[in-house]
Structures are given as C-alpha cells and as structure tokens.
Length: 90
Image (cartoon, rainbow, N blue to C red):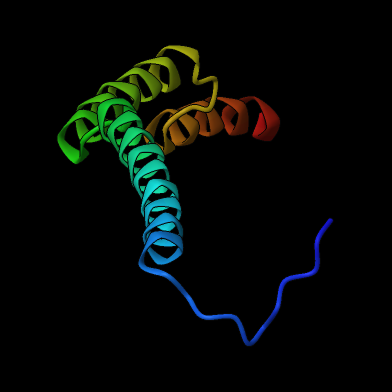
C-alpha cells in the first residue's frame, strides 16, 4: 500500500470523492434507521389496544375467581359457625 503524503494538495476531484463516500454512508444509515422505526411503529400496540386487552383480562380473572372461590363469605362463615357451636354446647 502506498504511503500518502500528508502535505499533498487536495484536489476538487479527491474532495468530491470523499464527500460522496461520506454522503452514501449517511444515506445508508438514514435508510436503515427509517426502516427500523417504521417496523417499530407498525408492530407496537397502542395504549387503547392495551387497555382493551387488560380490561378483557381483568374481567376474565374476576369471573374465574368467583367461579373457583372456595372461601366462604363472612356471612356464610358465621352461619356455619353458629350451627357448629350449637352442637358443641349441647
């Protein structure tokens, strides 16, 4: 590889080649960034979408909790306790 002379004069041709190379690299970087940003914007759910999904999920959980709950309410517990106490005292 030839050693470049740091004191050599820069011609318009070499300057233009350097600028063109830099601009091509910047164009490529900008295009890649735009493609990445476009992908993200197309594939990200909106806040409204997320709220709808979370609401549906909350309703489902409440329904399952009510269906599968084996813990009696306080009123049911007291009623049962009264029945048990009645047999223990007698």
